[in-house]
Amino acid sequence: MHSLSNTFLNPSQPPFSPTHHSNSKPMDLFYTIIFTTITIIIFSLTRGLKGTLNLPPGPRGWPIVGNLLQVVNSGQPFFQYVRELFPKYGPIITIKMGNRTMIILSKHDLVHEALIVNGQVFATRPAENPTRAVFSCNKFTVNAAVYGGVWRSLRRNMVQNALSASKLRTFRAVRVNAMDKLVDRLTVEAAANDGAVWVLKNARFAMFCILVYMCFGVEMNEKMIEEIDEMMKTVLLTLDPRLDDYLPMLAPLFFKQRKRAMEVRGQQIKMLAPIIEWRWNAVTAPGSDPTAAEFSYLDTLFDLAVEGREDPPSDPEIVTLCSEFLNGGTDTTATAIEWAIARFIESPTIQSRLYEEIKSVVGDRKLDEKDIDNMPYLNAVVKELLRKHPPTYFSLTHSVTEPAKLAGYDIPKGANVEIYIPGISEDPKLWAHPERFDPDRFLSGGESADITGVKELKMIPFGVGRRICPGLGMATLHVSLMIGRMVQEFEWRSWPENSKVDFGEKSEFTVVMKNSLRAKIIPRV
Image (cartoon, rainbow, N blue to C red; front, side, top):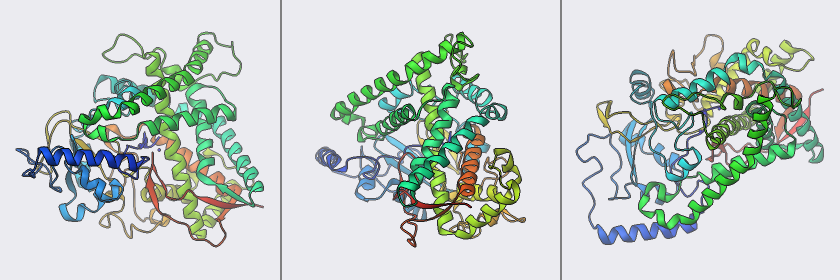
């Protein structure tokens, strides 16, 4: 649950590549301009990227652009380009992307040294590009804030006053309602399409219903929910990395994009401001609106005391924090559901075993979240899902509060420290047959997996250490509940029938299926 997975499982944005939500043809012109200019001005390769620092090894790059052209010319998504470097350079590498120095880690012992042993030093975030700073109100969010008083205040408030176990229990009825709506939507869609349904779209809607209520304290109609959802997706698209994020000298060429970003930010504020005002009126005059919930995350923000500041969050900052709450838990959870259904279709035995466990524990009533603790196979399925299909390839970017050392190498202040998550969750030294999707590995005294990283560091879908996803508990609850209800209500088969599931993947806001999954459902008798 870029975390609420990583989560929060809020997935980090991978560096710019032509496969990542960008129009590559206009970008080709910029690449040509850059390459030509550099060739004219600078006609010799540098002697490497290290300078006087002992940086980790990595491919040699050009002056100014570093490895940016190599990444683009590879024709691969960034994660694939990086994955092919580890066998050559080792588990810690340096890549220079324009003005950004990226230190990328792919082994559990390196991550443990950085984020556990030296957690305080590696607990901050690097500088943001100007566009992202507009939407984050200059890093006034839990995920983006630098390590310090603002981050402590925002995180403490979210964890204690919105995502604690006791607070989550207050929204149980909301989750029940959202699961019923999901079943109804799937039933109607299947009836109109010979049994076929789109998995991701429906899972995303159900999650957004829950999070909108938790955030604003009101149950909205379907049209309003979809409008807010579309706005949130537009914001995420606007935040996609651009070439000038890595080469600020090109910023003047992107004035139209910056203008568009400001327009989107204005639209975001315009859409959410009336909801925030409505909630303020409901809070200050209890009982004035019978539709208002007793509590919402938004309530905690109006008078929030922020360390180092005299004033509570401003209206734009409240919009930013609410947007973070919504985005953090929607795509990550919905994506996990899509991968789960794909695995059930591929392995009917897993689906059958899960259904039998549900029947034995629940009987004929609807599965309830209180049943989850008594369902070891469901919990094993969720763990294996998070191991095999973490929400993002890279955890949210870390940086150091001061120049540091890691594995004997220099980590300069301001560098991006990236964690390549599959390097840990697919490590054959940590896992038996890591390429398999096998929930049984977690049963009958088999393999262990502490997803918090406290006892061991073998999989980190929610990050680890001081910046671990604050929504870990909510994320696992939502994934478990939604998987359980969807399998209890329907048998899931391939569509078209007898076709093979394509497990190709791509990076959007999260790691999604390359071809969005459409499945056939058969209601359980």
